[in-house]
Image 1 (cartoon, one colour):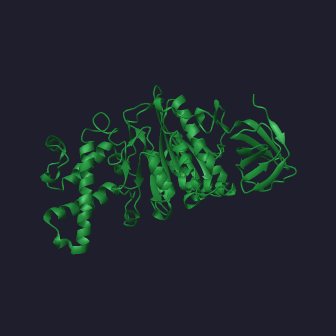
Image 2 (tube, one colour):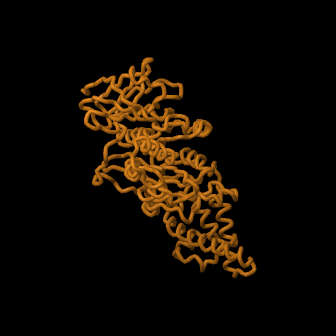
Image 3 (cartoon, rainbow, N blue to C red):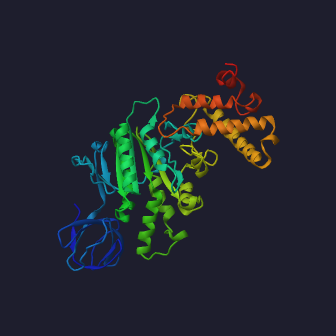
Length: 461
């Protein structure tokens, strides 16, 4: 049983940080309860202990704290989340408190929000296909159960619509095992929160979803806890209740900004662009909570979404995220301005596990060859398009003109499917063949003849 120690020795408060003096036996990461002079209780966490001084990070802000009359209780345990299967279909704030007007959750268990490190030997290899209903992801950048596949967006691009579409449509094929979506929103506006809640309610997807919403006007410090709380819920549903859980986290940039704010308040030496030097380590503690475990039915798959400041992919947040995760889906401002939805930039996007989750028995035997051929044809068509801009279309060869037609139709029909079209992988593959039919058969060098004979539509009819 944890011993609760109470102190009235608050020395100073700086932003979201509080210094408590003359303490004994306090431990790092311990949960703290702060009782204000008016009886209100706030929560915090021990960030640092130096001899008899403890630095506490406040989750609900420091406004209104009276140094002399404030009582600080050290609970002797880390921040915990009350979890239950009844959380599915419910909406919580960033700290895990119910905000949908329904009854409180009756806890089946209390779990440490920092989770337990997964032994690498206990990990199972991700190799099962998850269908999102979006052609540019399912076919060309396949998402696999247990993978972490981020979406790199930019300010003003429709990542929230894409996130909602994935939350609505994602499913594990050929499986009757339970599937759930855990949605963690950090630092979003009230308007965005309304959009997510209404979209999931109207489509009925709320019945299999757990929403954690941290608004832009909530304390920044709460943002640091939100993804951990969401992942703790996901791990419980996956490893103890046998569910396949897809965790969508938006926006990781807001999470990193909150880390930078706390780091500045602690007067730490800043790293790149003012972010703390431990940003990589911190992000890895979140991303590495995705995966499958040997002997466990469930899985945790992550789609973190981040907005790249000034569309700069070399910015520390996308840069470090790319090192830790298994690929990235990149949204294109050029496609967005041309009216394509979702504006997924196929060529620089990548899923490093796509070959493991596709093929016969998982999707279809023609998945990998058609994927490679579409990539190659689109890349060549983009070159033909640039050539046509410089020299004029009349300077193109007949084959180049066919590649140009292919590229225009690929963007118009394949990528531009809209946010409410849910394509099966079979429909996507058939559409791919239809587009490849524009090109001469001799150009299909990445597909074997017997597969071409089986799947390529007859041009005459």
